[in-house]
Image 1 (tube, rainbow, N blue to C red):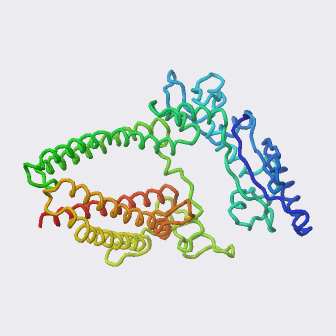
Image 2: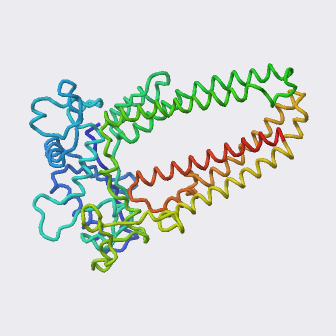
Image 3: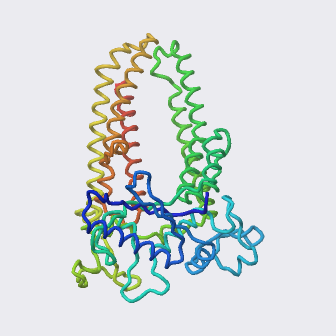
Length: 453
């Protein structure tokens, strides 16, 4: 089982096919990385794959190093309820007083996710007896193919860097979460194993699925009522309960948003993510974008066009202007306008094709609505064809990861050049939501008008 660890995957050159200099580069790189990690007081275990093609470095840490780094970097741990139950920067004095609450995953002080975060931080730091000119390892940059590392200006054999699963906790999650359909989600354990970000997602997912029971029940009753009232109204499509259904769903939406806002605020306080975005690091995509204004040019000289922070008066290392919307969109505003224009064009195409399916295929099958069986057939045809259309458009916009196909929305959001990963995700979620809501609501409105000209 072992403690939480990080795995570094390195390719092993074939001795029969590789050049002698590549074999020597590989040996030197392995020796250098292992030596550097051990100089940082980390434990390194080496394993080879059965086909002798890959070398796995399992990097872990002892408790003393974890506590030293946690105290130096002020990583936060949860206090016991008798001490207030808040998140507090770790200190060994408080630890000796047993002031910190024990994590749900069974570790003494630091949960699995925090241990891996500390280990990654140590791996990217300098040795305690570092010499002048020494640079961090930057193993993730090597794995990403950024070979311009001062430590090794030649070819690198690092292929992947990722955290390892802790088997004991994974089995516990399997039995208490994945294999327990009727039990509540173990959100604290999910947060301690995967991180608060994923725990917050599953909190929303569980809340959303639970709240959907209300409109689902109301929708079922409404569908039954439409069937029973078809003889009275003369048509299965037209029903006087439609306005009532719309009002109930609108009220449910308001209640849903209000309750989720309260639950989210409570969880953000419990998991200490109130100022997460303020402390978030700048993503590599933003740093490497040609649109980003950097404080230092590629040749190492200061950039005369670098942006000065109006609050601190210091030069921003990386900057990109949000731009203005009026009178002419500029910078990020211009890119967002392009995104909204593409969304409008695709939605227009979706609406027109849906109307054609309704007018020339589904509606003729339904006839005047007096034959209930034909209404069902027409509705099934309409649902199947519109579903295929929506699925195709969703694949174009959202992508198909199984086929390594990147969606159009991702490319549009990348062009907007957001500073942090959270800002990038928020923009993606907001514009995807806007696209889907406009698509569904516009189609429903036009179809309703087509039914009742």
